[in-house]
View 1: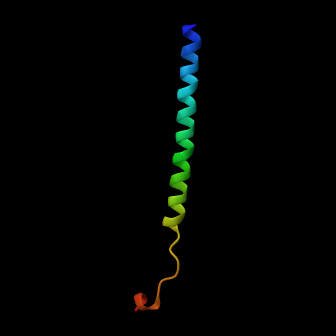
View 2 (view 1 turned 90 degrees about the horizontal axis):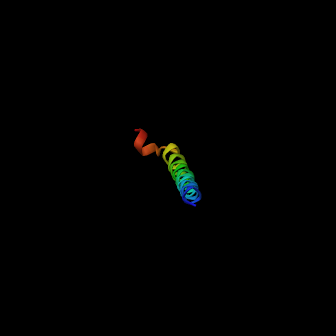
View 3 (view 1 turned 135 degrees about the vertical axis):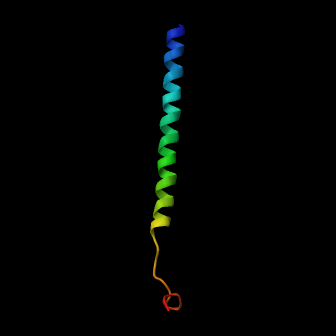
Amino acid sequence: MKKLANKMTIKAFVGVATILSILAVCVVSTASVIYVYQGNTPNELLK
């Protein structure tokens, strides 16, 4: 019975780690798109 509980605990931790990893990748990827986009520089700043 302890082995079954131990396996379930390990699976739960792996599942939580997977979800947190996917969430971290999503957050970083959306921030990277905002950071990489630079748009057009106004002419006043180019003088």
